[in-house]
Length: 357
Image (cartoon, rainbow, N blue to C red):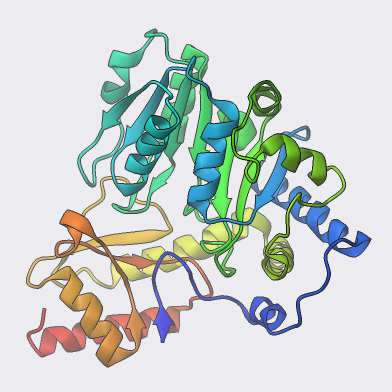
């Protein structure tokens, strides 16, 4: 199978090799060194300030989204959240669950965020802004410079879900003034799912220390204290932590974050150029390098997903809910090559020849 989904994705040989090894004991100086090395490389690639801190949670990215809310926000906050798809909706549901007052900026599927969307919320007493930098469900990549300027003008605490865009699209945490950056092991990091990563600014750490988290497992005060010595409070996904280390070093040795963004962007451009004569419409007004969202004009999106999986040995990424039959997505993250895309394009051409699409 060739995997063009947006997570889990294909991994390099080095990452897969570690997955085949016995999992070592982790309360050791050697494992602490790996954790601290990971912290420095994550900060480097996120362009975070030197005094930022990183924590590694054994959870999916959604666990880190909830952790950010539980540890930095209280009912005294007034949050503004961009909701343009499934993951913006998740942020809204988490805010509601934890009794954080919030207002949604609702966007239709595929629509970009503009200054006109933000204008009504200037100087309205908001304290916090939450956004999924790349709304993966619809393939919309939001304008972080626009958001950053808005947050700086209004002095807003900024929480950014970069789960599917980290390493695929530029992100400068320090210059943007972001306070929390969230990502996960299974996207462009191209490791197995199971670890989420949070980068915390000094302002974020201050909030953590002033907030009582009612969940011990996701208490960032405990996590930060343990991370001082390169450890976690609970048993982590040890093998994945080691795989992340290998992957970060792999990226660092091949041009760093800029090199990885260029590689992923090149795959995205190649694919989009070579499907122009196929019966697909790209449905996002603002694309990420990470994924291409496609609306097939002659067939069901879900039927195409099933046909590719069952007859061609190819996974693309289906959608659920009201987008199930209208949109599927092709990812550009993970250990993919031009040859892999040629096989996918050949499969599409074969389906067109057979009048399936």
